[in-house]
Picture 1 (cartoon, rainbow, N blue to C red):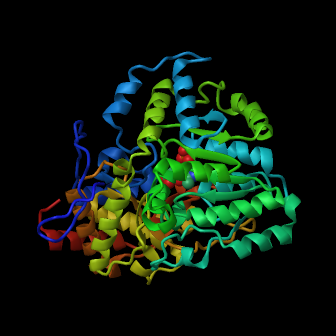
Picture 2: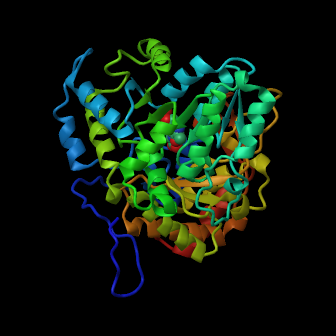
Length: 482
Ligand code: F0G
């Protein structure tokens, strides 16, 4: 976003785009919201979009596309093998990352599946700054374990540390020593570390991690799904990178990596994914699995229209006006919440705004899913759909015991260029009301609990009739307002 000073002194985000296609929204009454969330088993993944006012579940596949992206989709060349569209996408990706090889996949977790199948064997470990749900599930399904070696600051809710996604270098060395080099499948670094609040790593830290991996002969794998946010933060917060172009930073990161994979539902604002490398051996191994799981090598499960959009989306990722929109809106929202004493992860990261449910609902034990209860009650209060990122999003241990999450978060994603500032203000207002009435909110319990990735389609119910009381209080406070 451009550097614009306001005459009035105060400053607020200024969009560097205009809206030319709109989608009508619907805000249903608080009673209907109560019914909708009950029907969804108190799981916001199971809500119907027609009942949702602002969809802040995720930024995955729902960022606004540009006019250039939409136009490119009309010129897509559909063919099973050798389409011109694929050639354009390949060219765009190779230019963006500067890598020799690119292999397409239908989305991010498909890349994770392939990476795990190739590199992870029973007894192996994958050290990483922090896990992502699908990455971890696919590593453990193949018999591996995950070691999270993020710096301590990364797990603090309130912090002013600019790179909370960094790896603790001493811990990395000691994990490699204790498992032995041969048992380390690869080191995984996630850009814009999703589950700790969209927090970035620094180029300096990534350089050190790469040095250690190269010295030990361990592949360094970058999950670049949230690279756009991370890039913006490196440019803004890392003094040594202030004068580098965004592309120079991407190319540096790329040189330090052995394999890069990404969800193009996030990076490139389309729907798809892919894996890049300069290493011929890795390329050959990965290439074998693409036709098996994804599709032929010139589409990998993606539609040609999406491939065209991703090619342009990557080009636009090198435009600071474009990649700054998310972080600047998120920063605004975080500061507005802080002014109202609502506990939220700081510093503001990418992806969205992360409310600290453990503090917000400090009377609810982790066994009753405070972040899930916050997601459910916030939907009732606002019609806004957020996402639980806490204990519900973890897997139980092999003996059935709960694994309590380090953080209990309600993630309110800000899909890029989708919401206006007044909509963000509405979200802040309703969150403040809920905060003032937090004593009314109680916990949830599972009534249907899938074994793997239970947060996607598990169903829960409230431990008491607290939702009825919350709805009654809303009516009392807001009269006949929606
Ligand atoms: N890696 C990261 C860092 C992600 O955030 C995601 C998806 C994936 C991998 C998997 O990619 O969905 O294309 O298969 N994150 C979404 C989210 C689901 O809502 O945060 P995918």
